[in-house]
Length: 286
Image 1 (cartoon, helix red, strand yellow):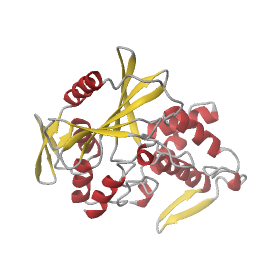
Image 2 (image 1 turned 60 degrees about the vertical axis):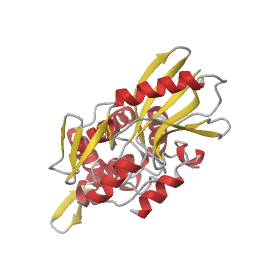
Image 3 (image 1 turned 180 degrees about the vertical axis):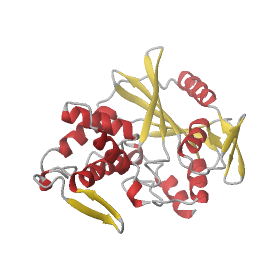
Image 4 (image 1 turned 30 degrees about the vertical axis):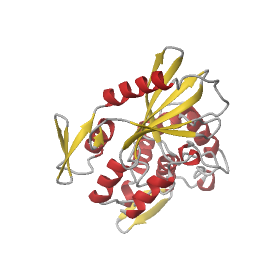
């Protein structure tokens, strides 16, 4: 528990909220959920996932490759969930995030200067709607369910904060505090397009995701994965490539397969689909 709380506190800085580390890799993986034109800016809505973060060693919020339900619950309710970018001319002017400190607040960061502000909010609830939905989708707890605005998880009843309420409060805050004012800066946040470029580059010969050059001519040689489980060298290479996509921040196996399709300039074969998906989901490590 102390580890998660310490991580949360350390995240309240500009460097932690930057979407990439010094090597250009995501450190707190997120999904862009929507973009909405509002007045003279675009409101970019995003969500920090639990999957591919708390069980991913390359994430700054890694807890355990197989976190317990108690660890998942604490991360789900204490780690940042929803955040928004006020975007002008394709660059962020402000970053706005709902956080707990320990009461709920909106944490504002100016990416250009690194300055930050904190504004109180009257939002009430235990867990965001996006986080509650992910808990159900990821099947962390087979008994978990949503009934109305309550998430039943880990033998607890957690009240859900609606996404619409958060977004409305954010828009009001932007208008009230004029957070859309100011010039767009040159800081760019990593997105799917940039991540795809990184993966394509690392898949070329000699890259971190090149598991294929060393097995040329021996692709169909048999290899024992673990007692009683056998595969081919190309199968294991595809598995490692899928696993590498997960570790670099790709959020869905389907996205990894789309990148593979672009690399190969063709649809992935059934074998490629199976092994890349197995690797992305770490099936051989369960």
